[in-house]
Length: 161
Image 1 (spheres, rainbow, N blue to C red):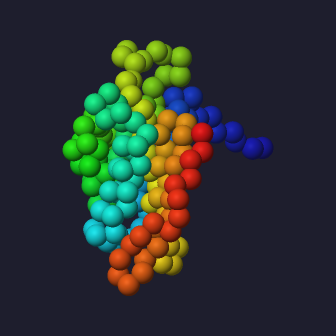
Image 2: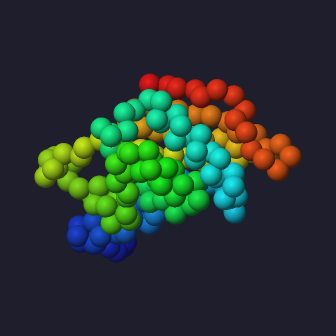
């Protein structure tokens, strides 16, 4: 005879909650994926990204809300540049991200978010760096190449809406 183990439904819920927290913390899809990123390269790329954003959005009337926590030289320089250009930037915290993840799907926000959501991915393949910027539904990307200890754009900006 087989013994069946009955698990209370609240224990299953707690287990699922813990697993989703662990999964959400370990597989963040945004940010800088370069190990030991160069501060100089990060600044050049962030300056170029800022210049492109300035071409597309009016500074004094635009707010960007980051989707992810920024803790890398590229992201910090980008935020600083945007603020210096006159953009409002709302940084994400780990707490604000968790609140978004666990908010009830049918529960309306108490206050609608102003501005555009902003996230980025920076990665590298050999001497080629790639920056992908997501602003709401728009995607911007550009490659950068390293030549003689300096980094330069390796092509034009690609825009997808």
